[in-house]
Length: 467
Image (tube, rainbow, N blue to C red):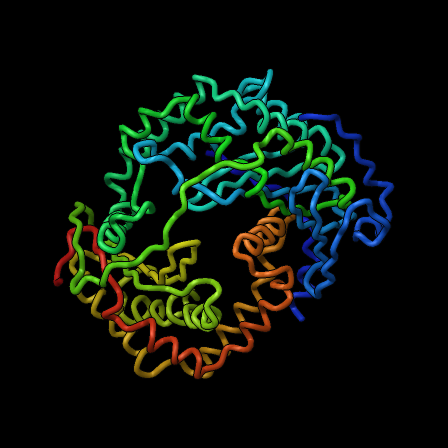
């Protein structure tokens, strides 16, 4: 599956603020759009709610066809980036057909209507556009970027992909072949082996634990993928975000034309929340002949709407999320020379939230490596962080935030993440303030609750010694 993003967008305003086909569509005339129109302030045929935040002006509206859209207009950059996401992903693959959602998204730019795979790719090049889709556990998404002057033709091509995807035999066989190669390669991948062992230990019976197999991939057919596409991509589960030199009145018909052929609704199985098993008392060892051992460790995390989420997020920077500024890197690499790198992170999802980390060390030092990781975690539990560590973490997390908004596609993607997590249209304005409000008392309380070494399950892949 391929997913491509595009070009430079409206980063200037973000940076400054953060530091404090059915029917034909008429061509766009962006050069004639007044700045007030592009900002959504002129009269509109749509009911547009404008959030005039410090970070960005976000226009919210529903198209005549019923699609919910968030738009940031930027008249000075002649590029349009659009993100589309549907709730429901690989977790909805029927049992025994794992890989079906992957087959759907793989083929969305592999031919549509009269255009075969080569013809579709050639047409995208002619229009200076990108279009691709991907499937995660809980969401299926597509993104497209184009010159605004080509938006009508580019979105018509997207519309053809939704209306008449081909799922031709050649690309489908290629998808299966690539998937089978991936299945074979993962047998010797330390990362995959560690992830599989962790999943088997903590939630083996959940739908998230299912994975592609030779049989499941081999049994897939273009017909199955065509049917499943109409279940994944429906109007009632669709969210859209966009950034570019376009107004709501210009964008709405493009979105409606692109999505006109999608079903109104469909049934997908509900995904239950994950209930993690108790942590393992000792490390799980998976033998793999290699000179180093990969060590990974996982415990319960926090959901995105937990009041302590930002406190944990700031704490994680000092634990292992801040590169050479984190304690694990300073102590285990710089001082003790046990690893080239070790990181930690909070993984948040619809139904599973974890606090995880990992790094590699020589086989002969694997036991010492784990001992030192646990000692560092225990130091956070017993002694907490220093005022300087907290100050440094907050300064970095707030100051670096605008770097994630240096293209139209990234801005649209960040807006989509906010929509998917239901954080609210004012999230971008509140985010840094919520980080700045984190206190050392809160950080140390969260450390005592979540960083207890015994709460983590450890997995070691290699030929470790000293365990």
